[in-house]
Each structure stands twice: as C-alpha cells, then as structure tokens.
Image 1 (cartoon, rainbow, N blue to C red):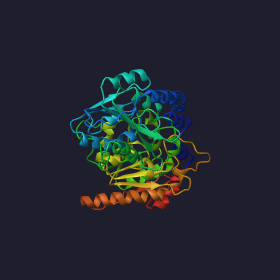
Image 2 (image 1 turned 90 degrees about the horizontal axis):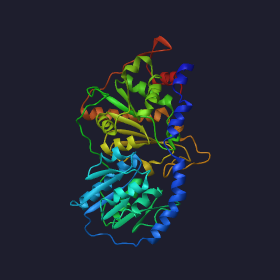
Image 3 (image 1 turned 135 degrees about the horizontal axis):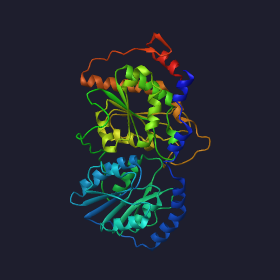
Length: 421
C-alpha cells in the first residue's frame, strides 16, 4: 500500500477529537455530585404511592441515546396494548427527539430542554400524569424530573453506584449482565404487564430521498459511533475500504451514512477507495433519521459498528452485520431476526456497561475483528438475500490494480495485500 493511501485511511487528530466530543464528562460530573444529594433529599420527602389501576395519562422519560430509544419501542408497544385508551406521552431530550418520533404507540412526543431542568419539570407537570416511567439508567437529572413531575406514580431504575433511585414508588434493579431491552422490560413487568413486543420502528416509504436511486442494489456502511467511548468502537478504516471495494466489485453500490459534521470523515474513506470503483460510493452524511430509516429499509445489507443506526436497522428487520468490540452483544447487541453479530475474539472485551466506562489497559478490541470475519458474513447474508429473491449469481466486476494497470486483481489475497491490512 502506498504512503498516500495509508494517509487516506488514517483518522486525523481533529477527527478523533470530534468523535470524543460527543460524550460530555463535565456534564456527567455535575450530574453526579449535584444530582445525587438532590435525589436523596427529594426522595426522602416524597410519600410512596401505589400503582394506579387504570391510568389515563402515561409518560415515558428518556432524554438521550438513539439506540436506547429504539429499544424502548418494544416496551412502548407493550404499554399501548395494556392501556389502549390511555394517552401516552414520550418525553425526550434534543439528541433523541427525532428517534422518538419514529416509535409506534406514543400519542405525543415532547422535547424537553434538559439543560434547563426547571423548564423541563414545568413541561412534564403540564400533562398531569397518572404514571411516569423513567427509562434512564444513570442520569440523575432524569430522576429529578421524575420526582418533581407531579405524576401520581413513578417507577425507575436502581443502577449500581449511580445513586438515582431514592424517589421512585417502584424501584427496578438495572442489571449490567442483562440486555438493555430486558432492563427496559423490567419496568413493564413492575406494572404487572407481561412484555412481548420486539423493537420496531415506523418507516414511511414516501418522501423525497436526497441521496440515492433505489433502482440499484446497495449496501449501507455506518462507520462512526457516538459517545465518549467512540474511539474504542472504531473498526480500522483500511478494512472498511477493502470491504467497500470488494462489494463494489460484486456490483453493489456502497452508501456511507453519518452525522452532518462527519461528511469529511466519509469523504476521507471514499477517497481511499480504488478510483475505478469510486463511482459506486455515496456519501449520505447529514440525512435526517427519518431519511436514514428509509435508506436502511431499502438496503440489501447494512454493516455497522455498535451505535443507534445499528439498532434502527435491526428494528426494521433488514439484513445486518453488527461489529462488537468493547460493547458486549449480550448487553447491547442488535435485536432483529436478520441481525448477525461479529464479536471481537479477544479476552477483556465487552467491558462497556453504561457506555462511558474506562478500562486501564483495555485491549484494542475492534482490531481483533479481521477483514475476513466480516467479509464472510456479508457474503453469506447477501447470497441468502439473492437466493430468496431468485436472483442469478452476480458476475464479478474485475478491475485493474492501480499499482499495475496491466494486472487484474482477481483474489481477496491480492487485494488485501494491496490495501495493506
């Protein structure tokens, strides 16, 4: 691999800082050292109440994380089935408001000004709730909003070392060994409801698609995780490049999704692709979540690191390859019939619980996921999808090697050595 291509496949320092900036350590510190005393004092003063028999106004509170919001779609459907006549209000934060609007079952989604707690509390109190469920696993601000919400009954999590559970009428233990969907279902079980609905999303097939002509076959790549542990979830970029090239040779277009401020990151990966194949690459950074959902629903395959887009694809039931390193699939894996997990085969991985933990000497888990592991799963899922449609096998589109235009690169071994993994 030439020196130029090596540079194309390397994240700049500014890009790393951009990814790290999506977690806010200062905010967590303030939440902990100011929030815990408030929760303890307010909880001590609050009289515990019984579960209402027929609640008419139900609130669900979760102010962050797209993936967590997607997983809540199952418990939301359980609540709707149990209380068909009730009004259900979902209280989100700014970062997960758009995701909350994709859920079935809520009559109203309210975006709370979470950085102005008094205003947030006033907004919740306006709804005169009979029942409020706090789905936040660690944030004390959520617990404070719940305690002062004016709801007749509130339920929430007791999470180890988080000190946020003192004011709830019913406390549910949040397990670091259970999948987050099962933790969410614990709140539903506390109401005497048997949860059964899997995560699902409302996908409107209409609307204008900004990026892609759906008449061609395509695979969606999502490379960039969010949160303070983002850098630990990154799969080596050279392997993404090789996978994009190989799938393009198999006549698939590749659509790269990302946040709007990650447009240049996607461009850096696309620019590292063999020039003869770049016409099959699409940069879809900056799509809304609704547009992303429509894109995922039409894809032949989605390949993603552990992030909200991964959970969206799983909830849609599309073919998905999910790459898990520092996060365990048993804790945070995709929930979907067509989801396949590729897990790092390295001891000490899967150490993330709430998403911001630090582990001294943590292994480079994502580096342990080889190109071959991912490519073989992609090939298997695409072959299965093609056979279910009755499509004939695709003839490979061989392309000249840029290092020697007279040489045709016809094998994975040739190409992997050229791309330099």
